[in-house]
Image 1 (cartoon, rainbow, N blue to C red):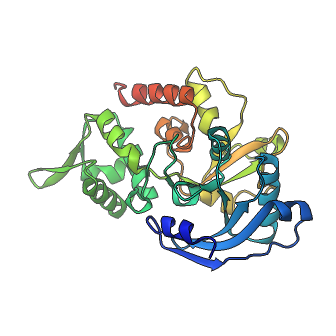
Image 2: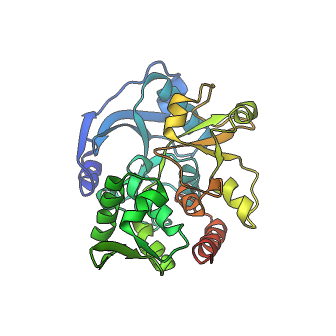
Image 3: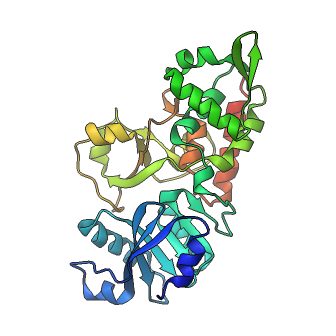
Length: 321
């Protein structure tokens, strides 16, 4: 099999199965068919169309056109396979949330919250990451101004079920992020060193976005109650970062049950990017929680953006009553 080396490499991280070495996408124009080879592969129980790029010149336009063609036929995830790729093109793929493999050693697979890129330097094992509910509860805990919190009070303060709180605290203890202490017969947690807790947690965070869709301005204005500013747009409102991008977020349940407007699976002229989150979006003061903005920008590779984001997170975690 021509992908034997790739499968062996991926097996170091996931359960891998080649479902179809030759997979046909119909209909597809001849130009795109000559640029790509297609296979069907299963990674960690998720099925992907593996797209082998056969050309030497990188074209984001052609890649977006191909994604559109595949999505019209199938609901599979999509991952691109390159023999080699320069850093600039890798960054372009990451910015557009497009999963890829380069050779047998570099991977960026957003659907599995996994990457080991040399320029991102975030080696992540999918099974070691927080559950979405745990990382949301951690964000809510770190957003509290109190330093000592009793477990029995958390469900009231956070408006979360006691069972979810207990499971999250157990997961956080297992990863040595937080520790429950006893005061008589009551458990409490000490979060005075919020910045240390935050830094220790970052390697366990999971990218919270299920998918990206794109809408026009009228759709945004007609659904203001469903959307919240996210990503670089949200960061620009609280920092000195300037951006012309329009990035929004929507909860999965709202997207599934309340959002009734048309959207596109790829960007178009003057479009708004909408992040469809896998869960409720952590908020603070009616806006996206600054710690949640970090999750939205997990794949951002602009050092200036990362710098301003860290400044705002520091200010947020160190604020006083």
